[in-house]
Length: 617
Image 1 (cartoon, rainbow, N blue to C red):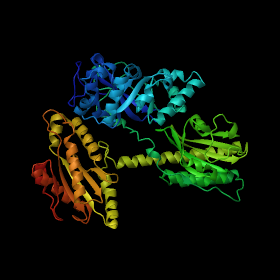
Image 2 (tube, rainbow, N blue to C red; image 1 turned 60 degrees about the horizontal axis):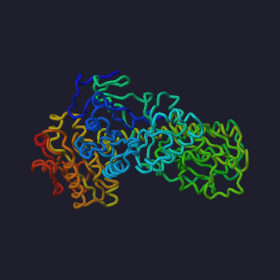
Image 3 (cartoon, rainbow, N blue to C red; image 1 turned 120 degrees about the vertical axis):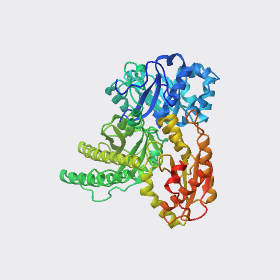
Image 4 (cartoon, rainbow, N blue to C red; image 1 turned 90 degrees about the vertical axis):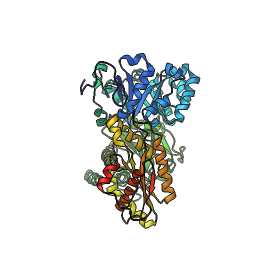
C-alpha cells in the first residue's frame, strides 16, 4: 500500500459525507488502461449493512466524476420500499448519468417483477443500469434482453471459459454483438495478468476489472484489506478519466469515395515503393485530421499495390462495429450506409485476429459474408486485410480486393502492411492531438470550455456573427456566497458543487451555444442568434435549475446565482466590452439582493470598481 492514510481506526466521514470505509475498484479499458469507472466495494462493517453501504458509496462521485460510479443494489435493498435511491443520490449531488446501479443476475432472475419495476424508475430518472455476475450461457437466459442494461459485467469464470474451445469463443462473440445492438458495454471481471488481457482483446472484449488493471483504492488505511491501495483524494484527479461517448458519436464523418488508378498501372520496384511510402509518411506527419490521413493512404497505396476495390474501415468499439471511411470501386457502394459487426465476415475475423491476412478466395473462406450490391454468382476475388493497430489501439482496417483467385502475392501483403503501419501511427497521433487540443480548451473540473477557448476562439465566433448580421447574447453567471461553501464544507464539496453547476448549465443550452467556466465560480454563456426574449428565457432556466441542485452541506443555503445579460454588438464592438457590460449587470443583480437576472439596458454600463467587486462576493 502507498499514499497518505486518512482517518483513524473508527469509521468516520469526511467533510462531504463520503465514508472512508468504502473501496473503489477501477474499471478500465483493456487496451490502454484508461479509467472510465469505479466500482464501490464494502470494507469492514459496511458489509453488514447494505443500506449504509449504498449511502456511504454514493458521495464518492465527488472524487470519481466524470467517471461512472458503479453502486450495488442488493436484493434486500431492492425489497426495502422505504429505501429511495433517488433522494439518496440527490442528497449528495450525484448526477444520474454518472451512477450505474449494479444488480446481480441471480437477483434479476429471482425478483423479476420487482427488479423490472425498480429499473424502469431508475432509467426514467437518467440513471444507468449494470447487470452483474453474468455467467456463461447468458444468451439463453432472460435478464439482458428484459432489463436492457447499460453494462453487462461478466463473471470471472468467463476468463477460463473462453479457453475451452471455439464454442465458448463463439458464445462470447455472440454476446458482444448482442450487447452492442442493445448499446450495452461488456465488462469482464478477473483480469489477473497481461496474457489474459491480450487474449480477451483479441476476442473483442474492451473493458475489464481485475488486479492486473488496478487495485481497489481506499482513503482510510484502517479500512484497507490485502491488495488495496491507500490514496489521498487528489489521487483520483491524477488518474484522468475517459468518458464513454454515445454509441456511434465518434463515427459521424461520411465515407470518402475515392478513385482507383484506371490506366497505366505498372509494377512498382522496391526503390519506387520506398519513395512512395516515404512520401506518404511525410504527408501524413503534416496532418492532424484523420480524414485527410486516410485520404493520403487511399491515394498512395493503390499506386503501389494494384486493387480492383479498396476500403478503409474505422472501429467503433462502443457499438462493436466497423464503419466505412474510404471506399473505392463501384461494387462497394452498398457499404456506404452499412455498419459491419466486428465479429462478422473475413474483415472482422482478421481485424480481431490482429494480423495482416492474404485471402486467396473469399468465396471459400468460412467467415465470408456477401456485400450488398455485388453479384456473388459470378465474382471470384482475392482479398488483403490489414488491421490498423498503433500500440494497443485497434483503430480500423484496410481491405483490398482483386478479381480472381490467388491474385495477391506475399510482397503485396507486406507492402500493404507497411502502409498500414504508418497510417495507424499517423491516425493515432491525430487522435492524441485532438485529445490534447480538447483538454487545452476544456475545464477539467466542470467539463465546460475554459478561458483559453474564450481567448482564442470567441473572437472568431463574433466575426461570424457580424458577417451574418446576427446578435450574440452574453450571460455572465456568478454563484452567490460560494466562499461560504468552501469555508463551511471544504473545497471538495465546493468542487462537487461546481461540477453539478457546470452540468446543470450545459443542460439548458441549445446545440451550437457555448458554456465557459470564466473564473472560479463565474460562468459565461454565449448564445448565438438570439434576442432579449431568448436570452432571458435561458437565464431564467439557468437560475431555476441551479435552485434545484442539492445543498452543499449543513448550514449552507440552496444554490443561487446572480446573472447579467448583454448583447454583441449592441453593448460593444468587441466581445470583451460586452462581457464588461454583462459583468456590470451581474454586480447590479448582486447589489439588488442576489438570485436574480439583470438585463443591461443600454450600450454603456460601466464596470464596477474593484472595491465594489470585493463587497459583492
